[in-house]
Length: 254
Ligand SMILES: Nc1ncnc2c1ncn2[C@@H]1O[C@H](COP(=O)(O)OP(=O)(O)OP(=O)(O)O)[C@@H](O)[C@H]1O
Image (cartoon, rainbow, N blue to C red; front, side, top):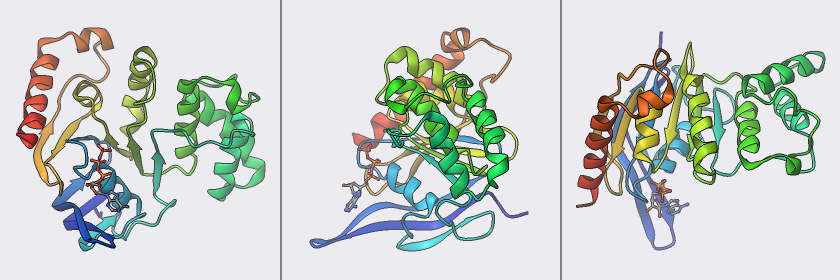
């Protein structure tokens, strides 16, 4: 069985008029189903570049990347959620999901039931008929998550999806997305927040300053179901992990 994500000696440099800009690597990374990998690192360290390479939007300058044994094809095995939801504002909530199901080649008769299932999985079961401009920023981001899950991707990539949201909405969404990496799916999630990384991740990767290489690859074994979120955030184990990751991030810029 091929690894879900397998990066070997991957490097990426952007081509610019002034010459190549090395952004990432060399980097080796394997991610298995069920992992929730959170990537942190200084600004410009290549976090978004890593996601773009994983999504198949950028081909690495050198090295090999495979998803389930083949090179990534944008929109096939991978769902992507960005900082801004990027929805069709003139369509309804259900219409946005329906469009994603059409792109995913889900037969028309199956779309209404699948739309209802996806919206209920992100807690928006009763908002299907609203227009996008009639719902809150947090709800829009929930629609974006449901849309990214429409094609049942094995890999979900999330690039600072909660950065523009207020603290309370952000915490609620964090609690909900924690379970997205269960079963045969994996998540790779980029954030600037060490707190968010420790809460969400089963594993945290800290990138060095540009070009981003792996400075720390830390498994997180905090309980994921048994303990209420508030209790977990207040635990000494959580504080210790937060301290360890924050120190690793500080070391990348010193
Ligand atoms: N299209 C591009 N052309 C040239 N250089 C680019 C391009 N996109 C990104 N870069 C450069 O590559 C480096 C890595 O960028 P990237 O966006 O991956 O970093 P990041 O860690 O996600 O940053 P941030 O935390 O600020 O969002 C940066 O130095 C950036 O300026």
